[in-house]
Image: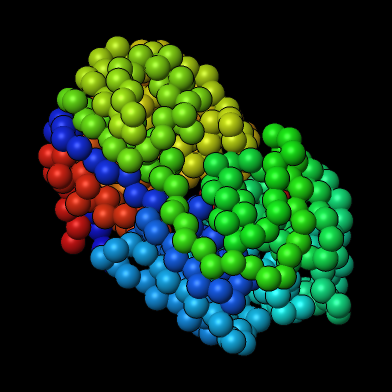
Length: 419
Ligand code: UD1
Protein backbone atom coordinates (compact mmCIF):
# COMPACT_ATOMS: atom_id res chain seq x y z
CA UNK A 1 0.00 0.00 0.00
CA UNK A 2 1.35 3.42 -0.96
CA UNK A 3 2.57 5.96 1.59
CA UNK A 4 3.28 9.66 1.47
CA UNK A 5 6.45 11.08 3.01
CA UNK A 6 6.37 14.73 3.98
CA UNK A 7 9.39 16.62 5.29
CA UNK A 8 7.95 19.60 7.13
CA UNK A 9 8.80 23.22 7.78
CA UNK A 10 9.48 24.19 4.18
CA UNK A 11 7.87 27.40 2.97
CA UNK A 12 5.46 27.07 0.09
CA UNK A 13 5.74 29.56 -2.75
CA UNK A 14 4.79 29.64 -6.40
CA UNK A 15 1.51 29.02 -8.18
CA UNK A 16 -1.05 26.28 -7.66
CA UNK A 17 -3.80 25.57 -10.20
CA UNK A 18 -7.16 24.38 -8.84
CA UNK A 19 -8.78 21.43 -10.62
CA UNK A 20 -12.42 20.88 -11.53
CA UNK A 21 -14.78 19.90 -8.74
CA UNK A 22 -15.20 16.20 -7.97
CA UNK A 23 -18.54 16.82 -6.27
CA UNK A 24 -19.88 18.67 -9.32
CA UNK A 25 -18.58 16.08 -11.80
CA UNK A 26 -20.18 13.02 -10.14
CA UNK A 27 -23.88 14.07 -10.36
CA UNK A 28 -23.34 15.60 -13.84
CA UNK A 29 -21.94 12.27 -15.07
CA UNK A 30 -24.94 10.52 -13.51
CA UNK A 31 -27.28 12.98 -15.25
CA UNK A 32 -25.75 12.01 -18.63
CA UNK A 33 -27.87 8.84 -18.37
CA UNK A 34 -30.96 10.97 -19.15
CA UNK A 35 -29.91 11.84 -22.68
CA UNK A 36 -29.36 10.19 -26.08
CA UNK A 37 -27.64 13.29 -27.42
CA UNK A 38 -23.91 14.09 -27.44
CA UNK A 39 -22.46 15.35 -24.18
CA UNK A 40 -19.03 16.96 -23.72
CA UNK A 41 -17.86 17.69 -20.17
CA UNK A 42 -14.71 19.77 -19.72
CA UNK A 43 -12.39 20.48 -16.78
CA UNK A 44 -12.82 16.97 -15.35
CA UNK A 45 -10.67 16.36 -12.25
CA UNK A 46 -8.57 13.23 -12.71
CA UNK A 47 -9.37 11.69 -9.33
CA UNK A 48 -10.33 8.16 -8.35
CA UNK A 49 -14.04 8.84 -7.64
CA UNK A 50 -14.52 10.36 -11.09
CA UNK A 51 -12.75 7.40 -12.73
CA UNK A 52 -14.97 5.01 -10.72
CA UNK A 53 -18.11 6.87 -11.83
CA UNK A 54 -17.04 6.75 -15.48
CA UNK A 55 -16.29 3.01 -15.09
CA UNK A 56 -19.74 2.54 -13.58
CA UNK A 57 -21.27 4.29 -16.59
CA UNK A 58 -19.18 2.12 -18.91
CA UNK A 59 -20.34 -0.97 -17.00
CA UNK A 60 -24.01 -0.09 -17.60
CA UNK A 61 -23.24 0.31 -21.31
CA UNK A 62 -22.72 4.03 -21.74
CA UNK A 63 -20.48 5.10 -24.63
CA UNK A 64 -18.15 7.25 -22.53
CA UNK A 65 -14.60 8.31 -23.31
CA UNK A 66 -12.27 10.17 -21.00
CA UNK A 67 -9.48 12.13 -22.68
CA UNK A 68 -6.94 12.44 -19.85
CA UNK A 69 -4.83 15.03 -21.61
CA UNK A 70 -7.74 17.35 -22.35
CA UNK A 71 -9.50 16.47 -19.07
CA UNK A 72 -12.66 16.08 -21.11
CA UNK A 73 -15.34 13.39 -21.15
CA UNK A 74 -17.31 12.60 -24.31
CA UNK A 75 -20.59 10.69 -24.03
CA UNK A 76 -22.80 9.54 -26.88
CA UNK A 77 -25.65 7.23 -25.88
CA UNK A 78 -27.61 7.32 -29.12
CA UNK A 79 -29.68 4.11 -29.45
CA UNK A 80 -28.05 2.73 -26.34
CA UNK A 81 -29.89 0.35 -24.09
CA UNK A 82 -28.26 0.73 -20.71
CA UNK A 83 -28.19 -1.82 -17.90
CA UNK A 84 -30.13 -0.57 -14.89
CA UNK A 85 -27.85 -2.00 -12.21
CA UNK A 86 -25.15 -0.35 -10.08
CA UNK A 87 -23.27 -3.18 -8.33
CA UNK A 88 -21.77 -3.04 -4.83
CA UNK A 89 -18.20 -3.11 -6.21
CA UNK A 90 -18.69 0.43 -7.58
CA UNK A 91 -20.84 1.97 -4.85
CA UNK A 92 -18.77 0.67 -1.91
CA UNK A 93 -15.81 2.93 -2.68
CA UNK A 94 -17.79 5.86 -4.04
CA UNK A 95 -20.98 6.46 -2.12
CA UNK A 96 -22.11 9.10 -4.59
CA UNK A 97 -22.87 6.12 -6.88
CA UNK A 98 -26.38 6.13 -5.43
CA UNK A 99 -27.08 9.28 -7.45
CA UNK A 100 -27.55 7.12 -10.58
CA UNK A 101 -30.75 5.75 -9.04
CA UNK A 102 -32.80 8.80 -10.08
CA UNK A 103 -31.63 9.03 -13.73
CA UNK A 104 -31.93 5.26 -14.38
CA UNK A 105 -35.42 5.20 -12.94
CA UNK A 106 -36.46 8.32 -14.84
CA UNK A 107 -35.24 7.03 -18.20
CA UNK A 108 -35.88 3.26 -17.99
CA UNK A 109 -38.59 2.94 -15.32
CA UNK A 110 -36.44 0.68 -13.16
CA UNK A 111 -33.12 0.64 -11.31
CA UNK A 112 -31.26 -1.61 -8.92
CA UNK A 113 -28.51 0.16 -7.00
CA UNK A 114 -26.36 -1.19 -4.17
CA UNK A 115 -26.94 0.44 -0.78
CA UNK A 116 -23.88 2.56 0.00
CA UNK A 117 -23.47 1.22 3.54
CA UNK A 118 -21.40 3.11 6.10
CA UNK A 119 -17.97 4.64 5.92
CA UNK A 120 -15.38 6.06 8.29
CA UNK A 121 -17.23 9.35 8.75
CA UNK A 122 -20.53 7.77 9.68
CA UNK A 123 -23.55 5.89 8.37
CA UNK A 124 -24.68 6.90 4.91
CA UNK A 125 -28.49 6.66 4.95
CA UNK A 126 -30.48 7.11 1.72
CA UNK A 127 -33.93 7.62 3.24
CA UNK A 128 -34.19 11.16 1.82
CA UNK A 129 -33.37 9.94 -1.71
CA UNK A 130 -36.04 7.22 -1.43
CA UNK A 131 -38.59 9.58 0.17
CA UNK A 132 -38.29 11.91 -2.83
CA UNK A 133 -38.38 9.21 -5.51
CA UNK A 134 -41.49 7.67 -3.92
CA UNK A 135 -43.17 11.08 -4.16
CA UNK A 136 -42.54 10.97 -7.92
CA UNK A 137 -44.34 7.61 -8.05
CA UNK A 138 -41.54 5.05 -7.62
CA UNK A 139 -42.16 1.76 -5.83
CA UNK A 140 -39.11 0.87 -3.78
CA UNK A 141 -37.91 -2.36 -2.19
CA UNK A 142 -34.73 -3.02 -0.27
CA UNK A 143 -33.41 -6.57 -0.43
CA UNK A 144 -30.00 -8.26 -0.20
CA UNK A 145 -28.22 -4.93 0.13
CA UNK A 146 -29.80 -3.46 -3.00
CA UNK A 147 -32.39 -0.75 -3.57
CA UNK A 148 -34.84 -1.83 -6.28
CA UNK A 149 -36.96 0.96 -7.69
CA UNK A 150 -39.68 0.71 -10.33
CA UNK A 151 -42.28 2.92 -11.91
CA UNK A 152 -44.86 1.71 -14.43
CA UNK A 153 -45.76 4.64 -16.63
CA UNK A 154 -42.93 7.06 -15.89
CA UNK A 155 -42.28 9.38 -12.98
CA UNK A 156 -44.83 12.12 -12.30
CA UNK A 157 -43.96 15.58 -11.00
CA UNK A 158 -44.92 16.44 -7.43
CA UNK A 159 -44.15 18.79 -4.54
CA UNK A 160 -41.35 17.38 -2.40
CA UNK A 161 -40.48 19.03 0.88
CA UNK A 162 -37.28 17.42 2.19
CA UNK A 163 -37.46 16.89 5.99
CA UNK A 164 -33.74 17.72 6.20
CA UNK A 165 -31.09 19.04 3.83
CA UNK A 166 -29.10 16.55 1.76
CA UNK A 167 -26.77 17.30 -1.15
CA UNK A 168 -27.06 13.84 -2.72
CA UNK A 169 -30.85 13.55 -2.31
CA UNK A 170 -31.36 17.03 -3.82
CA UNK A 171 -29.21 16.01 -6.83
CA UNK A 172 -30.94 12.64 -7.28
CA UNK A 173 -34.36 14.31 -7.28
CA UNK A 174 -33.36 17.19 -9.58
CA UNK A 175 -32.11 14.65 -12.15
CA UNK A 176 -35.11 12.32 -11.78
CA UNK A 177 -37.62 15.19 -12.02
CA UNK A 178 -35.96 16.38 -15.25
CA UNK A 179 -37.62 13.53 -17.20
CA UNK A 180 -40.81 13.30 -15.09
CA UNK A 181 -44.21 14.22 -16.51
CA UNK A 182 -45.27 17.69 -15.38
CA UNK A 183 -43.82 20.00 -12.76
CA UNK A 184 -41.83 19.16 -9.64
CA UNK A 185 -41.18 21.60 -6.83
CA UNK A 186 -38.32 20.68 -4.51
CA UNK A 187 -38.35 22.44 -1.13
CA UNK A 188 -35.71 22.58 1.59
CA UNK A 189 -33.03 21.68 -0.98
CA UNK A 190 -29.30 21.80 -0.53
CA UNK A 191 -27.94 24.81 -2.48
CA UNK A 192 -24.24 23.92 -2.79
CA UNK A 193 -22.52 25.58 -5.79
CA UNK A 194 -22.00 22.09 -7.25
CA UNK A 195 -25.80 21.68 -7.38
CA UNK A 196 -26.04 24.98 -9.27
CA UNK A 197 -23.44 23.60 -11.69
CA UNK A 198 -25.71 20.55 -12.15
CA UNK A 199 -28.84 22.67 -12.76
CA UNK A 200 -26.87 24.75 -15.31
CA UNK A 201 -25.90 21.55 -17.11
CA UNK A 202 -29.53 20.34 -17.19
CA UNK A 203 -30.76 23.74 -18.35
CA UNK A 204 -28.32 23.59 -21.27
CA UNK A 205 -29.82 20.17 -22.13
CA UNK A 206 -33.17 21.94 -22.47
CA UNK A 207 -34.79 21.24 -19.10
CA UNK A 208 -36.87 24.10 -17.72
CA UNK A 209 -35.34 24.42 -14.28
CA UNK A 210 -35.48 27.46 -11.99
CA UNK A 211 -34.24 28.26 -8.49
CA UNK A 212 -37.39 29.95 -7.19
CA UNK A 213 -35.92 30.54 -3.76
CA UNK A 214 -32.65 29.95 -1.90
CA UNK A 215 -33.76 26.38 -1.10
CA UNK A 216 -36.52 25.83 -3.67
CA UNK A 217 -36.31 24.55 -7.25
CA UNK A 218 -38.99 24.25 -9.92
CA UNK A 219 -38.42 21.66 -12.63
CA UNK A 220 -40.63 21.05 -15.66
CA UNK A 221 -39.77 17.61 -17.01
CA UNK A 222 -38.94 17.13 -20.68
CA UNK A 223 -38.21 14.11 -22.90
CA UNK A 224 -36.34 15.48 -25.92
CA UNK A 225 -33.03 16.82 -24.77
CA UNK A 226 -30.36 18.81 -26.60
CA UNK A 227 -26.64 18.06 -27.06
CA UNK A 228 -24.56 19.88 -24.47
CA UNK A 229 -21.03 21.09 -23.79
CA UNK A 230 -20.41 21.96 -20.18
CA UNK A 231 -17.45 23.06 -18.05
CA UNK A 232 -17.13 21.77 -14.50
CA UNK A 233 -16.72 24.49 -11.85
CA UNK A 234 -13.54 24.71 -9.74
CA UNK A 235 -13.13 22.49 -6.68
CA UNK A 236 -13.87 24.82 -3.78
CA UNK A 237 -12.68 22.25 -1.22
CA UNK A 238 -9.34 21.82 -2.97
CA UNK A 239 -9.09 25.63 -3.14
CA UNK A 240 -9.86 25.96 0.61
CA UNK A 241 -7.31 23.23 1.41
CA UNK A 242 -4.53 25.02 -0.47
CA UNK A 243 -5.43 28.43 0.97
CA UNK A 244 -5.05 26.85 4.42
CA UNK A 245 -1.73 25.30 3.29
CA UNK A 246 -0.63 28.80 2.29
CA UNK A 247 -1.73 30.22 5.65
CA UNK A 248 0.26 27.51 7.46
CA UNK A 249 3.51 27.64 5.57
CA UNK A 250 3.14 30.11 2.77
CA UNK A 251 5.54 32.69 1.61
CA UNK A 252 3.59 34.23 -1.22
CA UNK A 253 1.60 31.27 -2.51
CA UNK A 254 -0.67 32.00 -5.49
CA UNK A 255 -3.77 29.90 -6.02
CA UNK A 256 -5.35 30.14 -9.45
CA UNK A 257 -8.53 29.03 -11.19
CA UNK A 258 -11.12 29.81 -8.51
CA UNK A 259 -14.02 32.15 -7.95
CA UNK A 260 -13.57 33.85 -4.59
CA UNK A 261 -17.28 34.83 -4.44
CA UNK A 262 -18.18 31.14 -4.07
CA UNK A 263 -15.93 30.77 -1.00
CA UNK A 264 -16.69 34.19 0.52
CA UNK A 265 -17.71 32.81 3.94
CA UNK A 266 -14.65 30.57 4.27
CA UNK A 267 -12.40 33.51 3.33
CA UNK A 268 -14.11 35.68 5.98
CA UNK A 269 -13.42 33.06 8.63
CA UNK A 270 -9.77 32.78 7.58
CA UNK A 271 -9.48 36.57 7.60
CA UNK A 272 -10.85 36.66 11.17
CA UNK A 273 -8.17 34.11 12.08
CA UNK A 274 -5.53 36.53 10.83
CA UNK A 275 -4.75 34.87 7.50
CA UNK A 276 -3.35 37.44 5.11
CA UNK A 277 -4.33 37.26 1.46
CA UNK A 278 -4.95 39.39 -1.61
CA UNK A 279 -7.78 38.68 -4.01
CA UNK A 280 -7.41 39.27 -7.74
CA UNK A 281 -9.83 38.25 -10.46
CA UNK A 282 -9.58 34.43 -10.47
CA UNK A 283 -6.60 34.20 -8.19
CA UNK A 284 -5.79 34.49 -4.51
CA UNK A 285 -2.38 35.25 -3.13
CA UNK A 286 -1.78 33.97 0.41
CA UNK A 287 0.89 35.92 2.26
CA UNK A 288 2.94 34.97 5.31
CA UNK A 289 0.39 34.83 8.13
CA UNK A 290 2.11 34.97 11.54
CA UNK A 291 -0.40 35.84 14.24
CA UNK A 292 -3.16 33.26 13.90
CA UNK A 293 -6.13 33.92 16.20
CA UNK A 294 -8.48 31.30 17.69
CA UNK A 295 -12.05 31.08 16.41
CA UNK A 296 -15.29 29.17 17.03
CA UNK A 297 -17.01 27.66 13.98
CA UNK A 298 -19.67 25.09 13.13
CA UNK A 299 -20.10 23.06 9.96
CA UNK A 300 -23.36 23.58 8.08
CA UNK A 301 -24.88 23.10 4.64
CA UNK A 302 -23.79 25.76 2.11
CA UNK A 303 -23.41 28.72 2.51
CA UNK A 304 -22.25 27.66 6.00
CA UNK A 305 -18.73 26.37 6.70
CA UNK A 306 -18.26 23.05 4.81
CA UNK A 307 -17.74 19.81 6.72
CA UNK A 308 -15.27 18.92 3.94
CA UNK A 309 -12.89 21.66 5.19
CA UNK A 310 -13.27 20.94 8.88
CA UNK A 311 -10.21 18.68 9.25
CA UNK A 312 -8.02 21.14 7.33
CA UNK A 313 -9.00 24.25 9.35
CA UNK A 314 -8.38 22.25 12.53
CA UNK A 315 -4.70 22.05 11.59
CA UNK A 316 -4.60 25.84 11.26
CA UNK A 317 -6.24 26.08 14.69
CA UNK A 318 -3.29 24.20 16.26
CA UNK A 319 -1.31 27.32 15.27
CA UNK A 320 -3.74 29.81 16.84
CA UNK A 321 -2.92 31.69 19.98
CA UNK A 322 -5.70 30.34 22.26
CA UNK A 323 -8.59 27.88 22.22
CA UNK A 324 -10.56 27.31 19.00
CA UNK A 325 -13.76 25.29 18.81
CA UNK A 326 -15.45 23.33 16.02
CA UNK A 327 -18.95 21.90 16.14
CA UNK A 328 -19.44 19.21 13.46
CA UNK A 329 -23.12 19.28 12.50
CA UNK A 330 -23.15 17.19 9.32
CA UNK A 331 -21.52 13.79 9.95
CA UNK A 332 -21.53 11.98 13.30
CA UNK A 333 -18.01 10.58 13.15
CA UNK A 334 -15.88 13.15 11.43
CA UNK A 335 -13.08 13.62 13.95
CA UNK A 336 -11.06 10.56 12.88
CA UNK A 337 -8.05 12.80 12.16
CA UNK A 338 -7.95 14.03 15.78
CA UNK A 339 -6.10 11.04 17.36
CA UNK A 340 -3.51 11.27 14.58
CA UNK A 341 -3.04 15.05 15.08
CA UNK A 342 -2.69 14.41 18.83
CA UNK A 343 0.06 11.86 18.07
CA UNK A 344 1.82 14.65 16.19
CA UNK A 345 1.68 16.91 19.26
CA UNK A 346 -1.65 18.75 18.93
CA UNK A 347 -3.79 19.28 22.01
CA UNK A 348 -7.41 18.60 21.07
CA UNK A 349 -10.34 17.51 23.23
CA UNK A 350 -13.57 16.08 21.85
CA UNK A 351 -16.93 16.20 23.58
CA UNK A 352 -19.79 14.71 21.53
CA UNK A 353 -19.73 16.54 18.19
CA UNK A 354 -17.51 19.40 19.37
CA UNK A 355 -13.73 19.70 19.37
CA UNK A 356 -11.64 22.18 21.35
CA UNK A 357 -8.22 22.89 19.87
CA UNK A 358 -5.64 24.33 22.26
CA UNK A 359 -3.04 26.39 20.45
CA UNK A 360 -0.39 27.21 19.69
CA UNK A 361 1.29 23.81 19.61
CA UNK A 362 4.30 22.76 17.58
CA UNK A 363 3.70 19.56 15.66
CA UNK A 364 6.24 16.78 15.28
CA UNK A 365 6.43 14.36 12.37
CA UNK A 366 5.07 10.86 13.02
CA UNK A 367 3.77 7.82 11.16
CA UNK A 368 0.02 8.36 10.83
CA UNK A 369 -2.99 6.64 9.29
CA UNK A 370 -5.36 8.30 6.82
CA UNK A 371 -8.97 7.32 7.50
CA UNK A 372 -11.01 9.23 4.94
CA UNK A 373 -10.53 11.72 2.16
CA UNK A 374 -10.48 15.00 4.07
CA UNK A 375 -8.80 13.51 7.16
CA UNK A 376 -5.93 12.40 4.89
CA UNK A 377 -5.35 15.86 3.52
CA UNK A 378 -5.36 17.35 7.02
CA UNK A 379 -2.46 14.99 7.83
CA UNK A 380 -0.63 16.26 4.73
CA UNK A 381 -1.13 19.83 6.02
CA UNK A 382 0.05 18.80 9.48
CA UNK A 383 3.09 17.16 7.89
CA UNK A 384 3.91 20.40 6.04
CA UNK A 385 4.30 22.30 9.33
CA UNK A 386 5.67 19.51 11.53
CA UNK A 387 9.30 19.11 12.53
CA UNK A 388 11.04 16.21 10.76
CA UNK A 389 9.34 13.56 8.67
CA UNK A 390 5.66 12.53 8.57
CA UNK A 391 4.64 9.25 6.94
CA UNK A 392 0.99 8.98 5.88
CA UNK A 393 -0.42 5.49 5.36
CA UNK A 394 -3.48 4.56 3.27
CA UNK A 395 -3.00 7.32 0.73
CA UNK A 396 -5.71 5.83 -1.50
CA UNK A 397 -8.25 7.89 0.46
CA UNK A 398 -6.49 11.03 -0.73
CA UNK A 399 -6.53 9.89 -4.35
CA UNK A 400 -10.34 9.72 -4.29
CA UNK A 401 -10.58 13.51 -4.36
CA UNK A 402 -7.25 15.31 -4.83
CA UNK A 403 -5.67 15.42 -8.28
CA UNK A 404 -1.87 15.10 -8.28
CA UNK A 405 -1.57 16.57 -4.82
CA UNK A 406 2.13 15.76 -4.39
CA UNK A 407 2.96 17.12 -7.84
CA UNK A 408 1.07 20.36 -7.16
CA UNK A 409 2.69 20.83 -3.74
CA UNK A 410 6.17 19.88 -4.98
CA UNK A 411 5.87 22.56 -7.66
CA UNK A 412 5.48 25.00 -4.75
CA UNK A 413 8.62 23.71 -3.03
CA UNK A 414 7.06 21.25 -0.58
CA UNK A 415 9.14 18.17 0.22
CA UNK A 416 6.61 15.44 -0.39
CA UNK A 417 6.89 12.10 -2.16
CA UNK A 418 5.08 8.81 -2.57
CA UNK A 419 6.47 5.27 -2.10
C1 UD1 B 1 -22.06 15.39 -0.20
C2 UD1 B 1 -20.62 15.50 -0.64
C3 UD1 B 1 -19.67 15.36 0.56
C4 UD1 B 1 -20.04 16.36 1.66
C5 UD1 B 1 -21.54 16.26 1.98
C6 UD1 B 1 -21.99 17.33 2.96
C7 UD1 B 1 -20.64 14.66 -2.89
C8 UD1 B 1 -20.25 13.57 -3.83
N1 UD1 B 1 -20.35 14.47 -1.61
O1 UD1 B 1 -22.23 14.09 0.34
O2 UD1 B 1 -18.35 15.59 0.11
O3 UD1 B 1 -19.31 16.05 2.82
O4 UD1 B 1 -22.33 16.39 0.79
O5 UD1 B 1 -21.70 18.58 2.45
O6 UD1 B 1 -21.13 15.68 -3.30
N2 UD1 B 1 -28.61 12.05 5.19
C9 UD1 B 1 -29.72 11.37 5.64
N3 UD1 B 1 -30.50 10.71 4.73
C10 UD1 B 1 -30.22 10.71 3.39
C11 UD1 B 1 -29.09 11.43 2.93
C12 UD1 B 1 -28.29 12.10 3.85
O7 UD1 B 1 -29.99 11.35 6.83
O8 UD1 B 1 -30.97 10.10 2.62
C13 UD1 B 1 -27.75 12.78 6.16
C14 UD1 B 1 -26.31 12.28 6.15
O9 UD1 B 1 -26.13 11.18 6.99
C15 UD1 B 1 -25.57 13.51 6.66
C16 UD1 B 1 -26.39 14.67 6.10
O10 UD1 B 1 -27.66 14.12 5.76
O11 UD1 B 1 -25.61 13.54 8.06
C17 UD1 B 1 -25.80 15.33 4.89
O12 UD1 B 1 -25.51 14.35 3.91
P1 UD1 B 1 -25.57 14.68 2.36
O13 UD1 B 1 -25.74 16.15 2.19
O14 UD1 B 1 -26.57 13.79 1.71
O15 UD1 B 1 -24.12 14.26 1.89
P2 UD1 B 1 -23.71 13.51 0.57
O16 UD1 B 1 -24.57 13.91 -0.57
O17 UD1 B 1 -23.54 12.06 0.86
